[in-house]
Image (tube, rainbow, N blue to C red; front, side, top):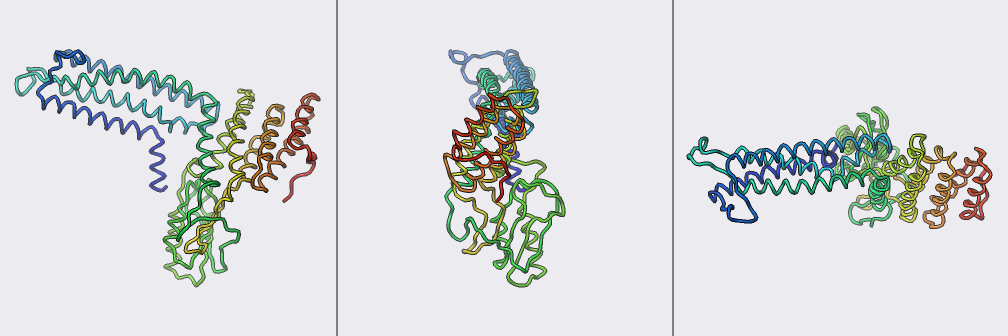
Length: 448
């Protein structure tokens, strides 16, 4: 796994933000105590905003805050784990990562743990006269008052946390969060401005593999999380071109073909080894798929959210409706976008090629993922037909639009094959005719 992928995993874990808050708590404790020592104890007793206590009072306040905050942090962590467990069983294990990467949960845990550590570090600096080397008691009044302020802040954070968790487990919130990342990836793939210059990405219809070629096989098994195409182009010689066979998100077994490498001239042993090393090192592997660069995986999370709602345990077709609406918004943007880039050009010459995710593939994945589970649900069938009709009406890339039209016919055919009630059949047919009045119900499978 590349360094950038490790940093992403670290950023989305429960470690990074709490670690930063803990470091901040340590620094704050040392700064506050040093400030008290520098000024020889601030005159806070006469101020209405501050209060002064003796040695035992300072220890009592710090101990009480530390123990209480630690208990609340334990409770917050337990609630988070419980919510993650419930979400995993109800909405799918893929959504657990969303709770772990949620900044709100990370900040809450960071505030509680850093406050606890701050109080412990300040507590060790409180010294009575009998233990002080100078013979005088040292009470960091300013640091103790800051601890009280942090305790008040923790109360507000606790209220925020309860509200945040309550909102976070709602289906609409989950779908919106997943759709947001999904939409960003679609915008990047189909609507981003293509850079020009010495190295740029663009669509290319022809294959770049020449006769003088060899195949590089995978040296490990797992999912391809990312491929650094530009790193390969900068490493290999100008006469060499590389065509990656699996796409990002595919599962590859050790020994399976990973890329086909070709050269204009004859291969030397050094050039062959250098190219093979560049290709293998450019691939980032993982045990699970991620939604950093895998647009199909991001879409599958929304599909899974809808499909699980149709299970006998959930029986919640309204969640599927919500998921289909989220899919429709993003799929419409994909259809109306540009053809995705599949080739990296260097100096005007195609050098690196890969398997892009087309809008038609997104259409197929969305309908194929939901249709088998929706054939017995009239409302789910109507949602799918309406999604296809809206996509066709909005228009866009011709092949993708044709796929949406075909899927509508297949959905209707699958529904009718299950002999629904006459009233439900009439509702579905009327909806189909509303969007596809000039079409006939497909009785044969799509070809081409």
